[in-house]
Image (cartoon, rainbow, N blue to C red; front, side):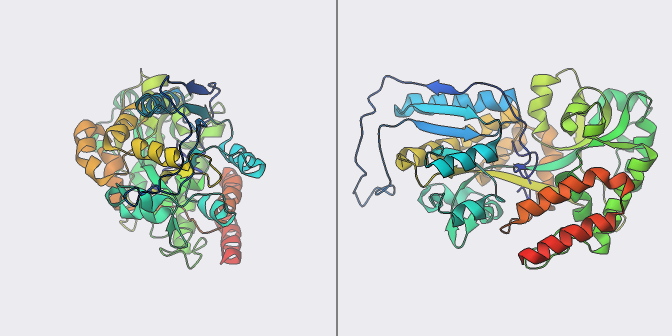
Length: 433
């Protein structure tokens, strides 16, 4: 999924990232191989002028699909989609949920045997593209014009479209309904400002429950920076803006909540791996997470009733959230590029994207799916509305390492000067420019 980086929606999705943003939550599920009895004999690349895939490699080799999963719900959904395409196409598919997506992709490229199709984050794109690892197939897609343009921009590098946007996600404030009511709060108390957020978080905090639990990541706390008017870089990513005063003020506000105990980082709440875990286990009354949380709540924490609302506005009146996306990458070394592109076409139909939305909470990257999504998931309004004011993580080459370094420092925010943390990111980004 796109919980870190992921996950851009502009995002981040989303994480995505984690890269995907969103750091995808690992799974130990074994690879699934779907085999059909349809003839899959080797076929030569088509030379027909009417075939947009003419010239791509084609073979009888199975298609391999490697992805970072947010959990059982996403794993099952991707496996089911691949099996359905296999049954339709007659091409065998091996589906592998990665233990460490970045590491396994790097190993595959280095060995010359990468997965044919894989999750690709915007942050990882420049490095893989420059190394010649990716097939720039985007212009071959018949539905290219249906993707949101900002998502196409995420996967366009040096003028070439390298991936189909798989989905996108944004962040919202997710509230435990029962805890909210037990604290004497009503819908009229949903926080719309930072001050109100801190006030209700204090009221919800008890000896066993923290008011707000978030991941100690830029991919979460960056939403405060966006709301306060800035981000790590300017809009066209030509200038580093990490240590501007508005960003310092945003982290100072987060620091104040950490100091008064109304907010904790997820790793400090019974060592929860992410905000959705501490929220789902009932150790937090609120969390800031992406729409992917719905999949985890349905599959792992179905007893929790919750409501998602827009993230509160900054003192300046600004509203913000993070946007993440994930894409479908194809290896240039694939021996069956043609089938790989056809698999991606299937995975990015409106029907399949809506099935993924139902299964694990992502938002479709296709504009024509927006009305269906809104009708099917009215409770996700806070997430879908966030697309209008969301910003994504920097995607210039090398930025992913800067974000990793920043994420390594943010867990110390309670006791470290926010300016010191942001000065470090500023220096690294300026070096890249």
